[in-house]
Image 1 (cartoon, rainbow, N blue to C red):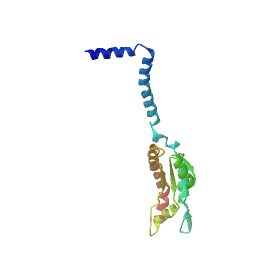
Image 2: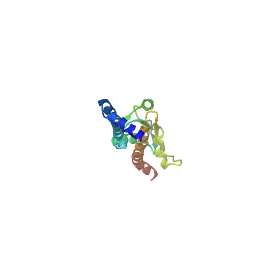
Image 3: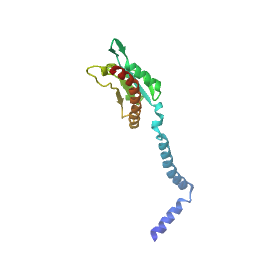
Image 4: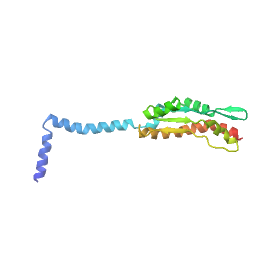
Amino acid sequence: MTSLTSTGTELRRFGRGLLPRLAIAAMILVPLLYGALYLWAFWDPTGRLDRLPVALVNADTGAQRGGTTVHAGDEVTAALLDSKALRWTRTDATEAAKGVRDGRYYFALTVPADFSAAVVSAGGAAPHAAQLEVTYDDTNSFLATTLGRSAMAQVSDAVRTTIGQRAADQVL
């Protein structure tokens, strides 16, 4: 019984002065404010991918097929820049790597030098898949890599649409 009386006395002491009341209010409001800000900051990260800064490098050199030069990398790059799905910045490989390392870009997408050759190989004797190179850096932000992987799903769809018709033309 003594412990209950002692606890009640201590709790009544907190209500007497202004400073204890302010301390209790701060103990309640600070975590509440922190939680609300955290929730607001991460509410819908994939809904704002158009603000995600991404480096775009086109190293494609083109390829010859049937007497014509094919620049599939230029087509893909133009389609990505026109899509506005991400905030693309066209740059070179060195600047892209530096930007990803510094946190200026969330990730870098590189169209490799043999991209067009891979696209036109679909109609040849030794076809191989055209691939894009993506560079992430988890040291800047884990969320950036997660968002980058989500964005790459959209990019893959855009590339398939752009390249799909050309590959179909090569095969047929």
